[in-house]
Image (cartoon, rainbow, N blue to C red; front, side, top):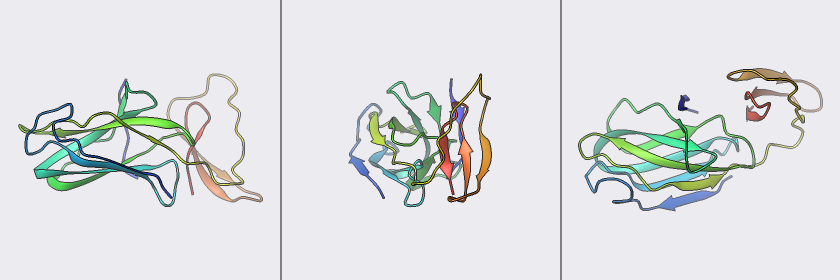
Length: 159
């Protein structure tokens, strides 16, 4: 199943991917890197370059099978960045960049680990079947925040 998600400290992962898993064309992804967002440790920012203007997207998931992807870019460029959203805290994720076009290609599958939730986030317990999608919930008390909770009852975004 593939879910499309919208756009959106850290560990930095950098890999050169010319010819890895795709063509050696001008639009193949190069200099693929990933880092955690400075503001939210469950958001990963993936960037890459291409020698010719192209569009692309990022496939990602908790295993090398991936299963989720960002929306494709709409404007061709040579410098690219996509945010990976809906990720659980303190979890390993795999990802790869896919570029589109005649000379498109893909990077090898790389990995990154998300950061911890900030102190004071409430522990959550899922009871029952849960729901499809996400829930937006306020937190009031010693910690004040807005949370996005996924179908498994995990906090995947906070502010």
